[in-house]
Structure formats: structure tokens, C-alpha cells
Image 1 (cartoon, rainbow, N blue to C red):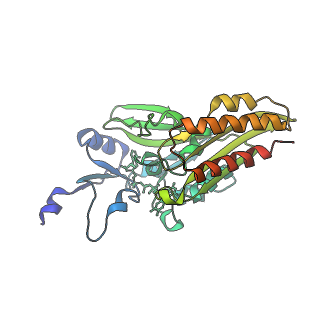
Image 2 (image 1 turned 120 degrees about the vertical axis):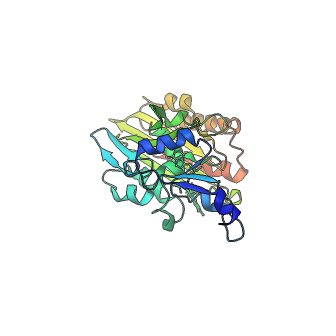
Image 3 (image 1 turned 90 degrees about the horizontal axis):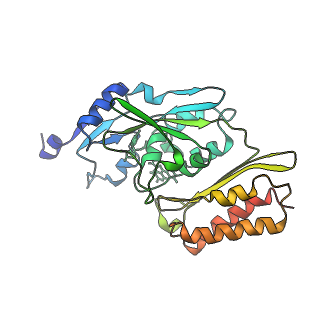
Length: 285
Ligand SMILES: Cc1cc2nc3c(=O)[nH]c(=O)nc-3n(C[C@H](O)[C@H](O)[C@H](O)COP(=O)(O)OP(=O)(O)OC[C@H]3O[C@@H](n4cnc5c(N)ncnc54)[C@H](O)[C@@H]3O)c2cc1C
């Protein structure tokens, strides 16, 4: 056996309990879900995988999807293809749109929801939308589990909030009825030159009143822009919104964008503002 083979270990747990035993005792090992991000640096000439991997591909429990009246529970190991199979009559249309942006279609049978949310260096297509949907993540280590709101999963620098030994096991999506849903993505998050922007918005309106309004966007850095004060300012207003109301909102977004640590280029800034205007146009006189 070559020296490099001796150093390389792949663990294949079959149950969540076996997985958590392994993550406790091998806390430096990387979780291998679909491998599509982990393998991105691997070429014939260069083998850049971590020395120790814990594959979750055999853990059936992590691939389960279940539904109640209020929630859709998705195992962290469920692939994008598996989730899309549930159908657009159950999954909110904005989430269908976001899922279809998780890399090229050929990747959908490999890439998992957990892998997409746990990548260290990037906030991919799903996180901004799951944040404004008030999705919660189940995080487990041996003998302990906790739920964390998507909005609190990453720290100020964008690093995923997973302590040694912890694994993301489940994603709980509330099945709210949104009247307006918008998801748009420009560019590819991996490639800064494509000036990526991931934008999403959700709203509820009844009888001429804006009952709920949320929006967020991200770019190539693993942080997102969201301003709950601006959102709260619109909620409860009569529809259609007056132009001065939407202008005030747009001014607030423009100011906040500079402070959000997104490091947007001028093009990305224009894209984010154009999509904010598009979302607001649905409610404006
Ligand atoms: C060319 C290309 C373009 C792409 N463009 C986009 C895009 O625009 N938008 C988009 O959303 N995606 C995009 N993707 C897909 C995205 O890059 C990720 O590869 C994918 O979502 C990761 O899923 P995975 O299951 O393969 O994760 P893996 O590669 O297996 O893991 C990714 C990371 O998460 C950790 N991890 C995985 N699962 C867990 C878990 N359950 N608990 C804790 N940690 C875990 C791993 O240790 C690793 O650090 C693109 C991919 C390619 C190749």
C-alpha cells in the first residue's frame, strides 16, 4: 500500500448513533455528504481530500423526508434530486427555484441539503431563503441535540456554528402560505468574476394589507444582507404602497448594503437593488 493510502481513512456509519460515535472520537475527520464541494480541489495530479472522512451516504435516517401539517422535515443527507421529487405542490415554489440552482443539474443526485448549508467558505443558494423562511436546523452530537434558527447558524464572519463532534442532521421548514415568493440568482457563487448575487423575498397580503414581508440576499462572501427593521416598517401598511414608502425602503437597503460586510462590486450592488425594486413593484401603486 502506498504511503498516501495508509494515511487515508473513510468511515461508513449506517446509523446516526454510529455516526455520532465517530464524530466524537474523530473530531478532525470531515463529514462527506455528496462530496461535490469536498472534491472540487481533486484532480488527477492533486489529491486534496482530508486524511479522514466520515461518509454519511449509508445513514438511511439522514435521507428521510417527512411532512406534517405545519412542517417539512428533511434529513441533512437528502439530495437535491430527492427533495425535488417531493413535488412543487408541497415544496414552496421559491425553494424549488433555489434547489434548481444548487450547481449544474448533473450534480443534483449527489449534492445534499446538509452539505450545501455547511460549506465553510460559501453561502450557497439555499441559506438566504431558508433564513427568511424561519427554518430551523437540528444539530446533534453524541448524547445531545439542539435546534438552531437558520439565521443564527453562522457567526459574524460566516463560519458554520458547529462545535467539534457536531453534525447537522435535519432541516425543518415551516409550510407557510406565501402570496408572493421570489428567488433569483445571478452568476456562480464559486466564481467571483461572475458577480454572483442570490436574492430572495417572501410576502403575505390579505385584504389590501401587507401582513408579512421578508427579503435577503448574499454574494460571494458567506454572509447575508437582511434588515428586519426595514421589513417591520412595511408590515401592516395598506396596499398598494405609496412611492415614497418604497423609496424609503430602497434608500434603507442601499445604506445597509454598504455596512453588511458583503464586499459587493458595483454590478452586484445594481443587481441587488434591481431585484429589491422588482419585489417591491408587486405592492406599489
Ligand atoms: C461548478 C459548480 C457550481 C456550483 N454552483 C452552485 C450554486 O450556484 N449554488 C449552490 O447552492 N450550489 C452550487 N454548487 C454545489 C455546491 O457547491 C456544493 O457542492 C454542494 O451543495 C455541497 O453538497 P455536498 O452534499 O456535495 O457536500 P460535501 O461536499 O459532501 O460537503 C460540503 C461541506 O459540508 C460539510 N458537511 C456536509 N454535510 C454535513 C452535515 N450533515 N453536518 C455537518 N457538516 C457537513 C462537509 O464536511 C464539507 O465541509 C456548485 C457545484 C459545482 C461543482
